[in-house]
Length: 278
Image (cartoon, rainbow, N blue to C red):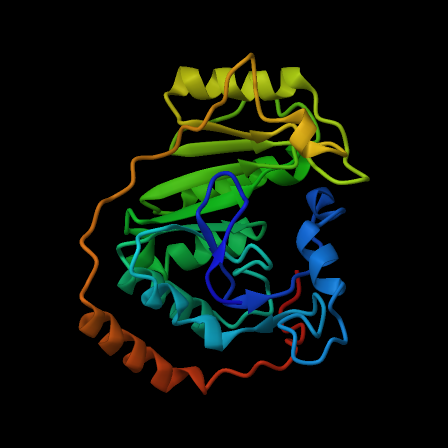
């Protein structure tokens, strides 16, 4: 899929250079991306004709370079860049695009915090140092989420963030050192698990004490529009300061696109097989 104007409150657009994923933690139980993708399984020619089966989408690599208007870009809203089966060379190719498209701000979110941290310390070190690329982890509970925060903090990233969604329990006291942004949201949909206000307020208060920008996305529930996103009578839309960079000329962007397109054919779009074991 090309540039998609996003309805997600904390971003402008989504970019999906990979598709599909596998469940790894309780937060994945009612995955909206899987539900959406599986609706189109078997529809010939549709981007999700293979449903939620993991595969690469190399034809999407160039998309951010085509967008002249600076955007907040959520990377892989329909996948996880650090899924075990995604080749490291391909992840490096995605990171290269993000480095080149420096007029955008990229938001990379993963549940595979250990793999991301390892790559940020190694082959993705140049991308890790860029302030227009934000690296985040999902945190839904104490057992699976809190270790992800530690992995993220160990990575030498310029901007680190937490997506605490769906928040499934009280996280208790958080170590927010080295964290630059926290998003909190409840699960939505017909099977949504409840989120208690005291859990949210605890995280908000800890963010305020640590001077970390706090963004409250939604209460969620069966009807998330009705539930809204007011917390204590107000909205919370704070986020890190975005870098302002001049957009390259059309010719300059065209040269980058041509350079990238020469390498796209090397990547297969066939379903990925499990090549790494946890």
